[in-house]
Length: 341
Image 1 (cartoon, one colour):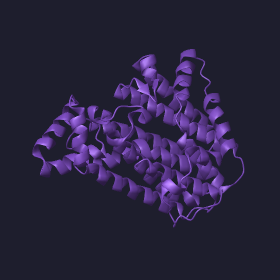
Image 2 (cartoon, rainbow, N blue to C red):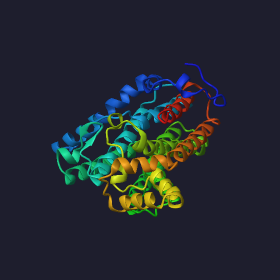
Image 3 (cartoon, rainbow, N blue to C red):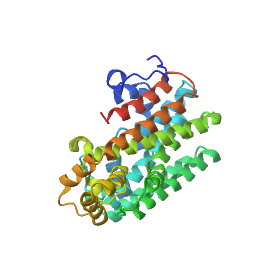
Image 4 (cartoon, helix red, strand yellow):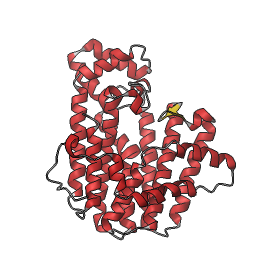
């Protein structure tokens, strides 16, 4: 695969490869990493093993570890056992956050499969999520790298704080865009930053830490905003949840925050309906509320914000080594943005 210029963006519908195509750039590394996600589990408690394997088997695209592998290869185009191991640890941490999210949201399914809390119970799911985090740090110690431990420990604290901030603003119709950005910077973007910066530390390329941090933060922001837009305009079967679920859960997402802001001046009745729905979580008129958000102009604003964050992520890549792995990172940003079409 040849490198594409970061300054000559071709519309995603014409040029963006599939996720599988991007993954194929590091296919061998990815296969080893995927096996290590399972192979790194070594609990002596069978229930811990059963639940951990259940949630990891629920799958997902393994985007965060893919980013780690692309970054590692971008700096040194040779197989790196350490990078593959770190990528597996990154996925383990991501899985733990999903397990805890499902408990908080009382989710019964994720990606069309029963959640751990639905299959067992909340207490079991929480404790196994805790085990996955503890095991991830147990494995991180093996690198004997204090800078790496610092990035991951700081990042894990930020993730937890982001989740608490989201809980703090749940059912709060007065939540602002600034509140929202603080939440997603922790709960979503921080792990993308850890995935990129960890690879730089392993490959002794710390001069790129700022650029990689910027890429991870802005790509994570764009990724979350796009996800939140699709809660009002996506395909329920593809997303694995019903449209408007975030609204029913009272989550302070940008589409709702902006819709309330716009409706307050243009549609007092609509504003009040949406405000009460956010505050109470009662959405018997879900279709009407979804249409209110759509017609307010909020989604157009959110799409623009997502594209702005995507552009910032792409700009951050411009100072990194120019090769097919950097191109793969760039194509991931295009692939994410293409979901808005």
